[in-house]
Length: 366
Length: 245
Image (cartoon, rainbow over all chains, first blue to last red; front, side, top):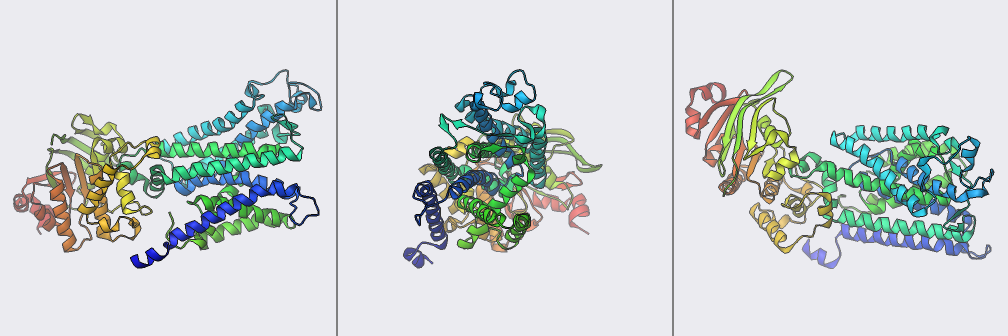
């Protein structure tokens, strides 16, 4: 055994190197896409606007997948409501974009967004105060999901609610928020949500240059999120998270307050999801209560399961591959998608418990 | 070593009308090694649950030094210096032997400190020392999942040592062990005691004899007899309910 290890790295290390290579190659290709988009249309290497727009979306989904993986893959907290944190982050950014429309709206009101004029609002509701500032909106995109996760998590973890019960509570949370945001009198645009954004940070949203900037901003956030998650999972805290997942009660008898551990990782995960939503909205140009639908949260969990939970590369691989499949399939058979998604989840659970990453690495996973 | 003593007085636990513990009183002095035996359902494991905060007593006093254990949660009690080894060995399978011991090492336990934790040379030596003591030095980089049953038991005892507890509660440490492993474990426990109090719950009377210390016999949630192994084995009440037929 020791003779062979001096000749070649052990299989686990080898596959880790392969995965890291794949990851770097993937990120490099993503970074090239907006540049290739600038090439003349008749060039072989030209990448269409559609591809850039759709991969920009996937990058945001990648950040969401990392957030879910940190909570579920490492700490064993299966949240079926992470779509809510994503949507709240998206709404915070959407509110900022709405304020920036100013007098360019249909009704030309310099302060109130169109839907408020239409609904007969006299003045801006307090919930909208401060959102004309970009830093404030960004802060809220982190704080609001973090606070919600803090309250829900504190109540659930303190009462030692785990497993399927926690999943149901988080699912109910996103469903309740969806119903609330559908109501016009919430003051968040009802079922139409927000759209028709004009600009962000002084740059027109319909220009190719701005879209490329947004794409790179999202990619940078993805890279930083990956580094942050890596830093956490490779620290002793990362091993504590794995211990919470595998034997929480044993860890308590070792003197760890597992409620605090789970709460910290859940809040951080929700903030990452909120950030992903905040990046997503200017890229796609719309946010509405549909983003809260329970199906979205479940789909995001399936990305992570397909890619391989408990590995950061797996979460990204899952987010990109499942969404690529979805984009391809829904272009000609949209009705089939939910069946394929469900089938995929069953197949992965039965045959690939460690996901696509498990195909590549032989050794026992974390 | 100036440790605290464990003091249980008039402790009763009632589950749905069933009295798992019935007016149990017990004192464990600092540095004492005590074996607790008793038939199934005598309340041995419930007694450990009470001390470690897993179960709350219906009535009674449970103190460790000046601390009231009935008001503290598991983590706080563990941080007071009370360690527990479960009947079924529970180690963290996905982590290596070294990582298991590192998690148990006495150090700040809050998430932020764990994130910023750097393993110092002194801590590393301590972990290596314990790995020697439990005979797992060769397995440092192996995942706990692939250890044998006996090795998992020792790893768990090693994790308790890393916590530097003042009081160690050990539930059936030799269940499922070979004779040789049992001997090794008895020696390990004797070495640990003296520096700290150890309470061992065990069915195996040969093992209790090998420990050679004071024995408490529990029956129906209360103390039936206490003394040396020869004393309790000759106590007619013990013979009637537990040993004899």
